[in-house]
Image (cartoon, rainbow, N blue to C red; front, top):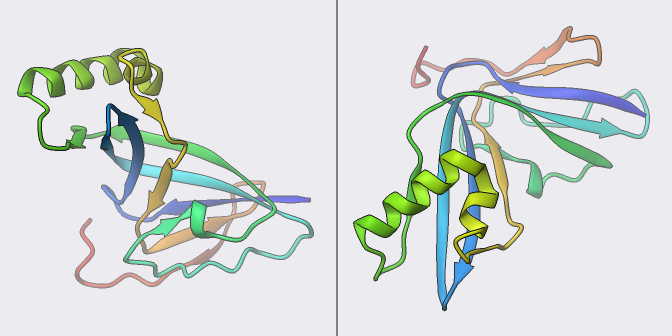
Length: 147
């Protein structure tokens, strides 16, 4: 078994999306990050086959691999809730504060159910590192990608 780390190469190209449900309403939390990493395990020492350009986003939930772990996500930006109709600004503020204080548990403590559909997204170009942190492959950069 071999572990690989997939990272975004440019700042502000990582995101966590979590889906919640309560009282017939679905709520999506969007948490952007400056930097992100996903650890991917393969059965042998062959690199995972990932589109490293991946401008539309790499979603680990849609990737066929033996095992994975959410890696480091750093320098978070302002969170956003894609809220259903009927939530007040006060309720959104309450959700935001609960998330900041106690992450996903803060929201579930308010009665929302985490539907388990967490999407850890990395937007390309991406780079792949081996277990020792050596860069083994990089997606090519394009002019429309910042910094």
